[in-house]
Amino acid sequence: MIGAIADDFTGATDIAVAFRRVGLSVGIRFSLEDVSEERHHEDVVIVALKTRTIAPSDAVAQSMDALDWLREQGATQIFFKYCSTFDSRADGNIGPVADALGRALAATRVVFVPASPRHLRTQYMGHLYVDQKLLSDSSMRDHPLTPMTDSFLPRVLAHQTAHPVALLDHRDVARGVENVSQRLAETAHEAGTYVVVDAIDDADLLTIGAACVDDILVTGAAGLAEGWGAAHAARAGARPDASPAGSSHEGFTSVVLAGSCSARTLEQVAHMMQKGHPALQLDAITYPDPAELSDRALAWYGQQDPASAPLIYSTMPAEELHHVQDVLGAEGASRILEGAMGRIASGLVERGVNRLIVAGGETSGSVTTALGVVGGAVGPEAAPGVPWIVTAGPRPLTLLLKSGNFGDPLLLTRAATSV
Image (cartoon, rainbow, N blue to C red; front, side, top):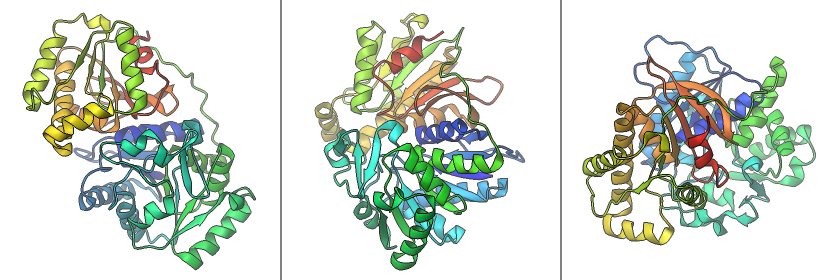
């Protein structure tokens, strides 16, 4: 069994799709509470955490708990998933978590491969690109929680770990699996255990995945999950998943909760409003108490037609976000808005909503935690890397947890209104 640890909830669903796409069976857990004697028998079991922006020591502790549980389930190899834009702060949490996992697993080398060409994230000569822009020139430069101002990933990672960090560039990757295997062994021996590896297309990821198929610990985003998973699937004789890209949602009552301030989510929110969906923006400055903010939002929802797929959002342009953070502080604004989103989600479900479309990794974590979602079944994709999830339990919910920058501009509208 492969065990996977994701540093946010939308990242967990992203790799669930990647592993499922190559024919591996996938289970996903959003909580390790009340697991009792349950045993998983899937090819891949993913634990979704919310550790990307918390204190490094807390991120390490939660990741180690996840590792212990996965090993109890029978996991023999571990995939540590972080964002394809390497979202992190100067002190972590990618480096500290990788350090702890590597020590516990006695890993002799660890590859770092954030490239995910399907999402237009590529890496060349150590520099990460978002579409045609360097990471440091993209909208990620102004991310409110993890501003990414350096595109050269070996340097970014080196600030987060005491391990030497080497680069295996694209010239070596292009020479094939045997060369990558040899160069990884040589590089790790010469320069230390951490190797950042270039990838510009899916073929590169298949090469890297095959070269690392026996590694006890690998790290990366959904691109490497698919490449590494494909190597495992080939060994097991699994067939690629052929499920349709849509899903049937007849009879559902939908609400969209958007918390991401990414450029793509801004476009998606604007499209919903252009199409006439009722929309409410959360005002944390006027109502800085999460309970009052959520109560007002739920009262507003009570005045809407449930069939209209309303939108409740805290998404805002960068200049507005900076103003809110100046008034409330960055952590204060996040605490108020994410706390309110969790309470709103719970209140909506109590009012009969059974399909939630959530935009933003932090928001998705707040929503699923507030709802007490433990796990679920991974369904087809609504967009690349964005699968429908049906939660476990006597009252299942249908969830779509979307990373901020994922999906086309129509995704939220399409997901909320599909039948």
